[in-house]
Length: 108
Image (cartoon, rainbow, N blue to C red; front, top):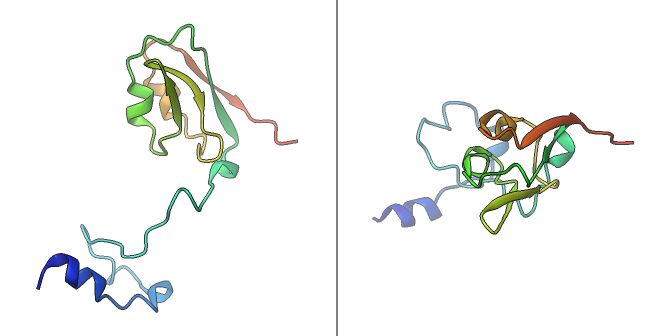
């Protein structure tokens, strides 16, 4: 039986009750979240601000962002996908040009 066939036969009706013994290291999670359906930007308390003029186009912010929230145009970072950015600050930390700073987000 192929791996794809095995995966489609999984009974995940009780997935909410699964503990660590059902989620083995390296296992495929059969019902993963989907960023198109789940907006996580409301979690953040800080937001990255990009100075596109300082951006050198190294793309480190893009590659390190765990949420794929860096908006790239013409090879440079120009903005943030606010629906999905959680405000972790990894982009600002990894930017060698100091083109990204973190600011406290005013949610008011």
